[in-house]
Amino acid sequence: MNDQAGRLRQLVNERKRAGEEPHPPSNELSELESASRSRHRGARVLAVTGGKGGVGKTVIAANLALSYAMSGKRVMMLDADFGMANLDVVLGLAADKNIRDVIEGQSTIEDIIVEGPKGLRLIPAGSGIQSLANLTQSQVTALLSDVLNYDEHVDLFIIDTAAGIAGGVAGILYSADEVIIVAEPEPTAVLDAYAVIKTLVSKRPDARTYVTVNCVKSEEQGLIVFKNLESVASRFLEKNLVYLGAIPLDERLKDAVKMRRPSVIEFPNSVFSIAIRKVMAAIDRQSSSEEKLSGGISGFFNRVLNDGMNDRA
Image (cartoon, rainbow, N blue to C red; front, top):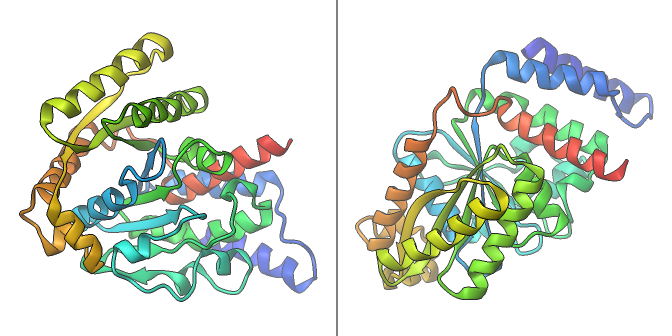
């Protein structure tokens, strides 16, 4: 695998020295993806999104990732909310560089990764990037060569996406093996969550689709919201949704956000932190290495690239 990764990097570097655009033919990308798959299944790729902004998806993604890290998993996060990137703030980190520097050739992935609590690693976002799917083939190839070896050292790759169903968001969701939809009891939030589910099913029907309901006043309220989504998705989309449980309103969470400290670390016994750990357990009950798709992190970026190239064809 390292030899194949080295060959890809050598091709890219040779073309850069020759003044050519490092634009490998499709068979080289296929070799890269096949090599990734043949080595092992790679990291699980899990995207977290919401139908609209303000439903708490970033806070949930950050605390979920930390819960996994605290359980002994090797976790990497990608902040893919390129318009409102703030995952580093939620985690209490300071990012001097971001993925934009990698895309522009000024840094490598290794240069920009920020080490977070409990060994969590973050790839920070850069503002002004409309979509990974809109990058050129050579730009994504450069990213692939950088992330290739991380599959060996990462168990879980969690992506915090932008809210809604804009092109850039959709491209990332189509490429993830597992997707968490964060909904709220408010009727418009439920409708927006269904719109995301509908878009996802139309492009990636095989993706495992989870739902968690945030800011509930009771477990019953969360279950009612899920049942409504489940009924419509089953009837009109023929899609089975997986319920991860509800996350209650918690004053301690507001305190943690103000402190720029993750709640699962600052207030591990709060109702929010307990609910996040239940969400983690629910995900693990639904997952197995036999069921997950192969390719890991590099497979994810390959699918993003292929989706973008197909859209531009």
